[in-house]
Image (cartoon, rainbow, N blue to C red; front, side, top):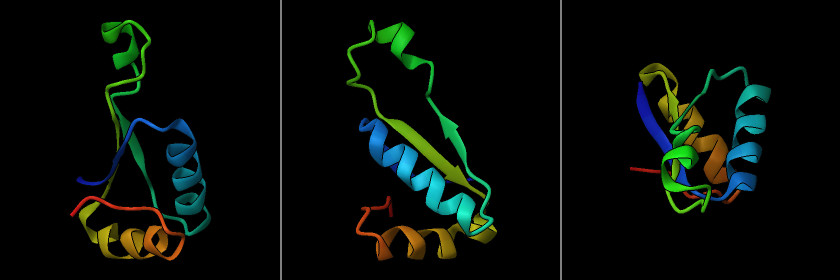
Length: 71
């Protein structure tokens, strides 16, 4: 799996997941439960991961919607 996006904004994460699922691209969200470790402050970013074969298309989908992606 490759990192597609890293953000601590839950709205960007949710919107990105919705866009990717609409294109039938499987996405896995990592670091979801890190808020327990940090004390629910929301400063640690979450990561969206996709399969390497879907990375090019997933980046294109997010860029088309003005969402910055990890390189």
